[in-house]
Image (tube, rainbow, N blue to C red; front, side, top):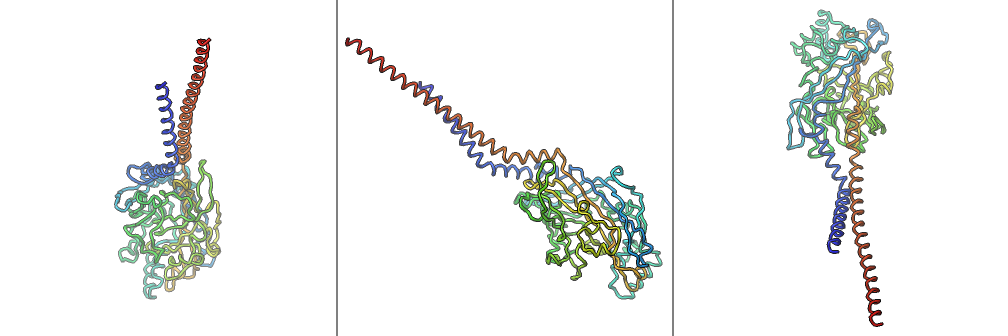
Length: 490
């Protein structure tokens, strides 16, 4: 009997302990899950997310679309410029983080970014040897640089350019215009005379960038070790917390680089720092969408993203000397060595109609030209990215310069590009597993607590049944004793 009671007590105690452990663990599971999420996602040399950040494992593609000026010879006659889109010319992109320095004192990491582009001819619509006619970037930049200088300087510059045989238009191959670059006599002379800030001996829109560790500059971002919700957010660029290219708040270094985000459960906007334009772009929440059986928050570029200060007064600091053009483009001339460069969304999507009215050939389309990003809100993992911008050059009349006479002021589209990447099914399954842990852990813990309750009640039931049987035996024994006594007396 004593041995049986001990077993019952052991069963009851075990059940009680299991129940308490299950209830306590289940109640604390949200805290435990956040800790697990923190350890998995926080950026450190030993974290799970490090390998994905160090070298982007998801296939990324860079697509270039060139604009061919088909009636360039009629520009001086007052005919609207007409452009035909060429491409896409597709490159596979591999993104590496190099020269890392982990700063434990402030929870940041300093690094450089090396990108490699490999041409994918089978995915492209055209060859890199295709010829493109458009503005002469070097000549236009020189004209833009001296446009406010004294008349005699403009006249001397014009004479010099005419003797060199410079033209307002030129025709080059896609290969030369993108990565390979081309020799330009005016550029070489301008560099020797310190008349341009362009640091290269050749010109190409992405010349000297492929396989370079230094082109994009040096970045410093938060790892999330001190504040999980700042993970991936830029702190400095080129060792400064603001740039010298824009005034006021427009020069602040802010936003993610796009490949590492903190959790974004309720963000109305997100900022992406883009070194190509030396500032950040702010995307606005659009809706929730499903991709690879995951729900994500979709953020898109809106009219406010490239507003000229009319809708968003704080954006007026993007206007040099208070001179803002129509809404829809961003003046990045200070960022691009003084060239009259302006970025917009492709085909002037969401831009002021005046940009498209001055030319022909533009066909803005939300489906094709919208800048968007879909992020899983709990983990901050990008599910879909379609980052795209158009590069335009401003050409306008310049007095005392024959190269720029008898022309109208036009923002000329040169090219547009899109960087596209989608979360693969294998990585999506890993994200789903991580998300499932949130409810699976709670269910498991409370399920264990339920088992503990069951064990406790089994012990309790065994104890009651044994006691009941004992009492029944006592009754039977008492009746037996009474019958014996009665028989003896008889």
